[in-house]
Image (tube, rainbow, N blue to C red):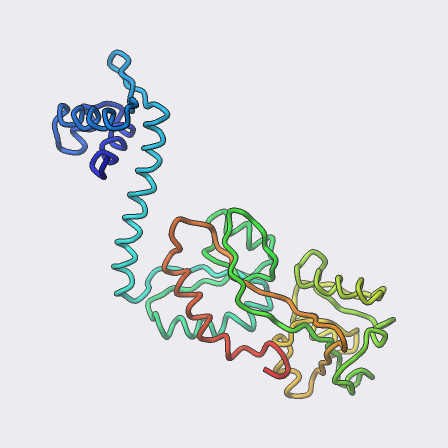
Length: 302
């Protein structure tokens, strides 16, 4: 069996006859028949059944047809990859992520991508993990940077970042004087948190359960900037990724503290549809992220 025979099987299946397949491949009907006979002799199995003027593909033929699709797609992708690797990336890349990622991770990433590939057209879409996954599956996005875990058989997940979650307070809050707090310090405190259902909120809720704290939640929102504004105005305290407040902490508008004896971390990773070959655009985004990752402020000591 060779590539030419796989090409003939595909042409017959698509055109519906040996004659039409010959026209499509610019060879005679007899040449098509001869190649199929040689293949059937090699396999000791029929590939097509002749029923009057009609033909029907057999299970063995169907298996070879599926193989032909994979082989020729891999061949096409490989050639495209070799060609693309010599050129600057072009076209549109659609990135998805939560608001924290869009505000604090994507800006330096986009700067790096535009520096490396000036002709690329970048589009950002912010949303919940559920919304981002829906867009990926519908083809409305190319890849997403999401809080893990994301366990979906049709998606590829690549963990790339661990971010420390810290207790964040206003400047005049009693806990602002502490670099570390113990779980008991948080009992009875009013909390402003991410909405229930997000993976970040799930990590915080798991901490509350493990620490046997019944949190007093006064406000929930998916908008990290609203959370910070409410905390600055004394509405409550919060638990959010350090990079979201790094600048505010530096200028003294907010204060943060680790939770003593607890490692509260959220893991973030790239998520994109599973394919036979990872698109070059996805590869280039991930490579660019690796270059900017050391510059991200994911903990007070970073």
